[in-house]
Image (tube, rainbow over all chains, first blue to last red; front, side):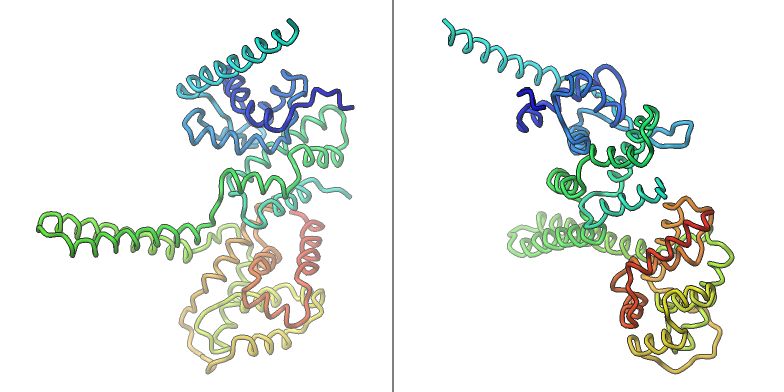
Length: 115
Length: 281
């Protein structure tokens, strides 16, 4: 059952922000859809309890990276939609650059291991 | 039989208990839960299983509350008001007293003005809080029976020589309106009256017809009653909802009276919820 590809909690927590920003960069979305998208893209390797998503979303909203609004569906049900702001796009660029850096460093060092 | 609305209501209450999560976030979590359930049901999962799976996916209540507490601490309104007032008081006093040590007049004047503004803000904050506490509850959703229960409550207060209509009088009003509630609680009206007199004391019985005002707790109970009705998706607020609203305040006189008379609050609540669901509007 555990294929060894379940990620450590710290990695999951750290990658939450850029993942969410990446999905929102493609368009407005709401909580449930967001998490389904992330689960689908990452092959369910990033396992969150869904509720963990919301404090992260609210924190990013406070930082001014994303904004939210309540929309009413035809069924009368209300959903909170999130969309990315310019500051969020900037933050996304920075964060993906940082992850690339880490990735490169790891790759570089790993190559050396086998030389 | 599994009732989805009721199950969601109970789940929401669990999350709200302890006031770790703010009400807006609970609404958002509920929206997520309903989306998750809908999705599973569409895939052919039975509704009860869909509910439990979705709840598990969101995360266990205590851990959710822990995450929210750590990430976005939520202070209920009273605590927030006290905090703001304390800050304003300390800063205002500091500036005012610092003033006395200022050698020249100009900064002194500025200092005094700033202090006045801060103390003004403090007073405004306090008044806003008092106004919020005393806000007239919206009775537009109350059914004729519920309104009669309120009228009955108003007639009870003077009989005790009380100047205000409190939760204890609401209790009598409700019991007068739905007599079989008394049977269910295993109590008699006289017993309740006696216990009220013991707990709160009595004054001279008044005969005048001047309007007796409701206590803030009684108004809160009315607000909670309307919220209960909304939560259960009933069209009107009934005396039963009013009863549930009364029970929410553990330190209210009504709850104390019932407790002294040996009523188990939790089962009383369950019993009334059962009736409401069975009669379901």
